[in-house]
View (cartoon, rainbow, N blue to C red):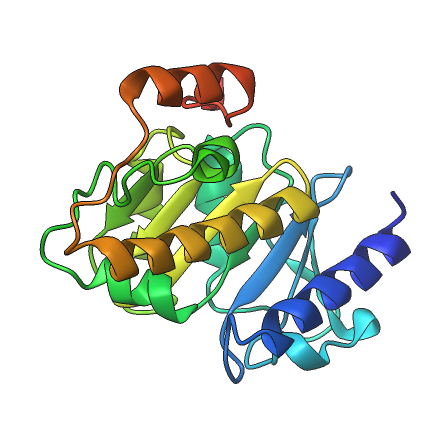
Length: 218
């Protein structure tokens, strides 16, 4: 895919996410890793609903700004996922309400933030890790993601929102949407003792469709 097409795709997906209320105001950011090792990333303080393809930040493989506006301050979390998920070509970070709400609940297991409620959660997300709160843009969040060892493509940042890696931008967006829907279902049913998928069903889905549980760099 050409860089021009990738720029357009970032803006199209960003607008779709914004218009459906999945990331309000100027929150959220998207990046795509290019064939030359550099990145395209949404600018700081930019609404995902009103992105200009020509003004996206173009970074070198070392993180130097080559062109476009100043990049999002959340570069550390994007970089950490690319470093530890060798198949990742895109990262999406949103502030969607249900994921943020789940990240604040006291009973959440940091190693498995959401139960296996639906097959598509397993197929698109696998499991989700929960990390402690870090100030937005804090480089320490990158270290925390690296500490997960590449075992998760989906991570919830406490009191903040999800960050999701995918082997394409489309895959990262779809997984983020599935994560938000699963968080919504969890909040709707958590007091009702819902029936969840069995371990056998989860294993079958994981083997057949799911993202790799371990995708660490060599």
